[in-house]
Structures are given as C-alpha cells and as structure tokens.
Image (cartoon, rainbow, N blue to C red):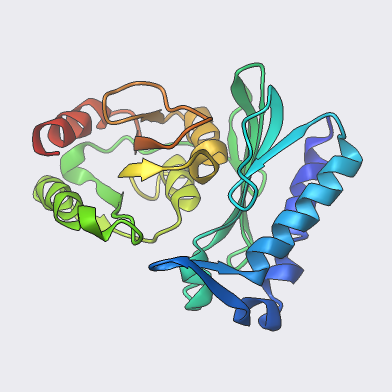
Length: 253
C-alpha cells in the first residue's frame, strides 16, 4: 500500500474545504450538531478515490457509519465541523486504516495550518515529515484539553466538574474542539492530556495511533483499550500523567 499517495490524497481535500459555497451549505443533525456540504463532499471524494486505489478495503465514517469491516478505512471528513462553520480554523480531516484488529496507519490534516500528522504502526509519528514525541511534563506542569460534548449538554455539569478538578491540579485547561487535533497536539508535545466522556471511533482512530507512535497513551475512563467499533470514553496523555488523570476522573465522575 502506497501511504505517501494516501497522504497526498487527504491533503488534496484542501480545495474542497476552501470552497465558500460548500461551507455556507449548513444543516443541523441535532442541537449544536452541524453538518456541511464540505463534510459530505470530502466523504464522497475520499470514498471514491480510495475505492479506486484499494477496492478490497471497506469504509467506516461519520457520514456513513455502517459497520467496522475486517479491513477498512475509518474516516472523519471534518473533525471540528462547528469550528469550520464559525471560521475558527481548527478543523481536520482524519483518516485511519484498520486491519488485523488494529489501526496500522493514520493521517490527520489541518488545511488551515498545513500541518499533516502521520503514523504507521511501529514506525513512529511525524508532523510534515519530521519525527515528533510527547512531552515529559508532570500533571502540575501540564496543559489539559477536555471535551464537553456540545450535543450532550445534559452532561455539562458532570463534564465541567471534572474539568474544574483537573484545572486545580494543572497549569491550564483548553477546549479546541477537534478531537483528532487534540491527540496530535499531545503527540507533538504541545499539550499533555485530553479527556472526554464519549467519542466515536472516527474521532480518535487516526489520532490514537499517532499518539501511541509518539510515545503517548490512550485508554477509556476505566483504563481499558479504546474500541474501534463503538463509541467510548477516552483519556489521552503523554503517558507520565495517565494514571494520575485516570484516578482524578474515577474519583469525580
């Protein structure tokens, strides 16, 4: 499989993302849950191109969930759609290849910054071709990202309670609202941890491999490996703070 070709294919979605008429075509899937013509166009484009290149590989994505195949692409065409709608410019295209019961390749591309994070299983993690690794910071030195789930406002009190407890123990809290970028930022050593009570596989499939290959750690709230076929809670860290963050969440959720 030509991974360089796949990376360039993902990067070619920039022209779709920059199409103002597609960005303006916005619909609501639910409260605070946007979908744009950009999401649909990228999903259709990548599905068509990847099928032409690798017709034996299935497809599992946000815009066409279906089911996880033994060998398939896991795609989030736009991770951070609300950011895209509001011009926040913190959105990404996230693509992972799942086979042999694990993610073996991942790419996360932010077209606004031109940053492209990539990883192959067992071969390290990279940002625009340069090797990256997680930080060595302790929790008291850390910046932590957390997701509160804008579509799950009924959980807000619980989510922000956790955020408050962790805020007391770290340098600061962030919410950039693109899960794939969160994991990549930990991989690059920019931030040190991230947690959210519920994410779907396409939110974290590529990013979890990139983080693992950069030396980080990802589990669910109970310390178990995250699944690739069903939604899950998630804790991602530089590894050093993982057990401590898990314990805080366990005691306060």
